[in-house]
Length: 303
Image (cartoon, rainbow, N blue to C red; front, side):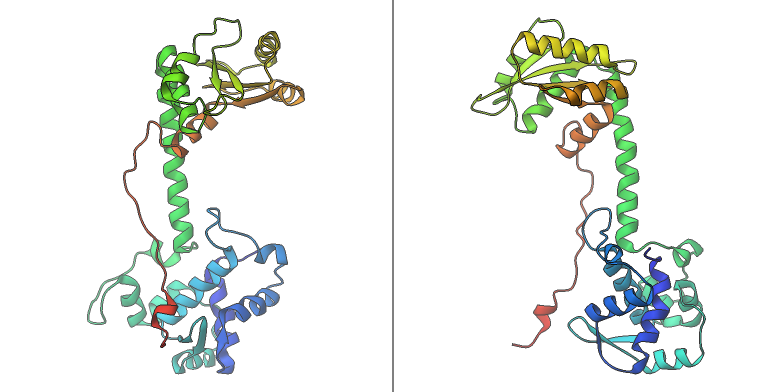
């Protein structure tokens, strides 16, 4: 299991204690072996799949050591211990973390505060004790915002009129690439009149196949009988594909029944529906956009 990134600071500094120039790549392998990490551990990704987790942790542990003046860059992806770093190792510290470096090195504290050495800015206890790297803090914050937004969307969906709910379903399917044009989709759904079917929509813009829709604002959990009714309606139309969309959820029996049918049936519950609306920007708007940038080492290389 990968330890939190602050616990990598001392192993990295000790590894660099031989005063040689080391690469990040070799450091990953060496520190990984020291910590008895498996190949699966080393290949684990951050939740957002933006970077491998151990590399991210090691990068930020090394970055803090550099900000404290304990390491210095010696080329692309390479670093070396400094005199300050060697002096600290002689003190034989039992552990290193942000709080330790903040208490010991005034210039490190000011660097992390974004202030120059003449400033007297201070860091909060929460800041010095954090166990997460900046990327994980961003992803964690994003996950919380998204979770709150999912709840808000689902609450809105449960309160709209049935006709409006069908319109939302149409717009979502069109944004996902189904239904041909918005006009075609609007004419198709809600017009079938067959029991268990609310509408028919094209699978693609050419109309090579059709998908039958059941779209309901449901109060309770949808059980197997409702799915059976839908399957029966599909059989009556000789349909091969159907989508059952609801604002609630499905029982295990309903899910198992749908998965066993020869007819391809996709069940979309309220949570999944809300997620799709966010992913396809339906009923939501972008409030802020942040770009995460990293150094372009090639730019600074001499030609």
